[in-house]
Structure formats: structure tokens, C-alpha cells
Length: 363
Image (tube, rainbow, N blue to C red; front, side):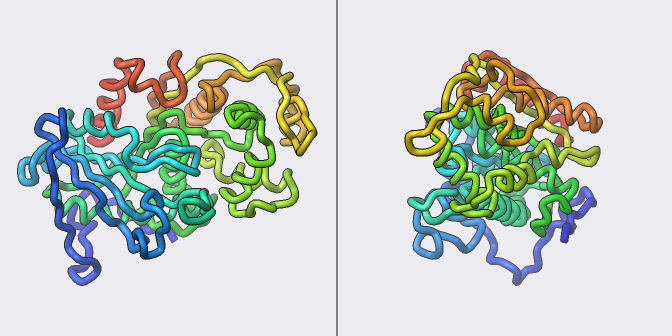
């Protein structure tokens, strides 16, 4: 059951004294970070290396980037929770560290978290639901961060890159309408805005299938098996049409409503994938990408090509912004000629634009 508090006061997020041990931060200076500091490998939950986590990348830990020494941080400093990318199977809280350093130097407090991954080599096949529950656990931990850092956090921004952008959108939109996913997430602290850097918004679309699978060398069996796990159906899910319907539930566009928080998004556009190109359907069997439209029951005639940033279809930008506009959800969006998740490094004007928009929605 959703228990989001709507009062804009710090006291309403105070935890009972005996609920959890007090958090003590031990920040250190960052190279080239100016006055900013970082606290590494802080626990937000019990799943730690050797205690339920087989690999450090799936432990419930985060790094905290601070704009100044504790006691010198403005108590109204904007707070961003960041969810890393990695196709839901890899990556960790260190990426993209240059962005976190830049944000800290510009007055932000940033927490970058690890979470459960869909990767047996790193500790298990976890689903989208497990990842969202980890985010929810981190959000419940935010009041401890505020108390330890000497700041007030009545609401926060959540963001992420690629797979992390997808999860950030899902988490933020679930808070607006929790009955869709029905995961019982608590949403203890309100989301002020959500930021997605090339995060897939329409993962059950043929366009997403074309570009994502193409980046994975057209390997249909591996691609669908991973989404079987991510959706909660398992690697041997059986019916492909059932898989498509299940991952549609985890497409952020299908959670958009008028209650969703303001959304900030950036997407790239670097070329096209011809739908006449073939993918490996099974051992020794190939089919053109155009077949995905019928396989995914889209009811639309396949286009001759699909725009891509190298991994995610440009269609994800179009459909997300169209849904937000139709629902009257405030948003700020950019599409740039840059590869997947390289916009903030190659299009430098996007960085101050991002900072200004997050600050605007956190006021």
C-alpha cells in the first residue's frame, strides 16, 4: 500500500529512534572536485557482500557526493538519487562519475546506488520488481542521509542512464499510480521530478526490439530470455505473446497519468537500422526485423527503418513526450545527435540545462 507523505516538512520523515542505527558519514576529498567530497560504499539495506550479495555490484550500497563539508552544506541543497545503466545486467554506482562530481561542484547532493541485477554471474537473476524494491529501500533510507548530512529533504529528484533511466521513470510513475504495477512500494519520500538519460520508455514495442536486439548482434533467444527474467516469467517463459504483454506493464509510457511528476529527458539519434536486416530467431534460423511487428501484435505496418542512438530506438523519445503532453505532465526534453548516453559529454549545453531543470522542480 502506498504511504506517501504529502507534507513538505523534514520532521514528517523522521524515523523512530530505535528503528535503525544512526548513519555516520566519512567523506573524503575527490580529485579535481574542488570543495566537494564523496562517501563510498554506504549500506542502505542488509544485502551486503557475503551477506546475501555474491558480488559488490548487487549489494545494497551507494556512494554519496557532497558539495561541501558536513555542516557547511546549505540545508536546502537539491538531492538527486541516481540509478546507473548497464542493460539491467551490469554496471555499477561508479558510472557516470564525472556527472556526479560536476553536480556536487554545482551544489547538489547526489546518491548513486547499486541494485539487484539480471545476471547470474553477479548474484542471481533478478526481475524489474526486485530492482524497483531496491530503489524503494534506498528512498526509505533518504531521511537518514538528510540527518547525517545536516540537510532537509522533503522531496527529491530521481534519475538514471539507459536501464537506470527506465527504472527511474518506472519508480516515479508508480508513485503516481501504484495500482498498475501493484508492487507495494512505500514511496516514503515524494519524487519532485524524474530525469532519464536515454532510458527506454517503451520496451514492448517492435522499435525497441529492433534497436536493442541489433545492438546485441540480433540474438533473439538471449534477448527474450533476459526479458523473461526481467518480467518475472523466467528464462523459459514459453509464450512470446505473453512475454510481450508482461513487459508492456513495465514500459513507463503505460504508467503515464496526470499525477506523474515533471519529467526531464534526453535522447540520442545517430542513424537507422533497416528492418530488412535479419536477426537470429533460433539456431540456424533467421527472420527480418520487420517480422517483429506481427510477432508483437502491433497492428502497424513495419517501417523500412528504425531510428536509433545505437541501442535505444528514437521512437522512445517520441512516444514518451507525446504521452506526457497528452496527460498535461510538465516536461523538458532534448534530442541530440549523439550516441547512447553520450549526450552529457558531447553536448555540453545540455549539462546546465539539466541542472537548471532539476533545481526548478525541486523548489
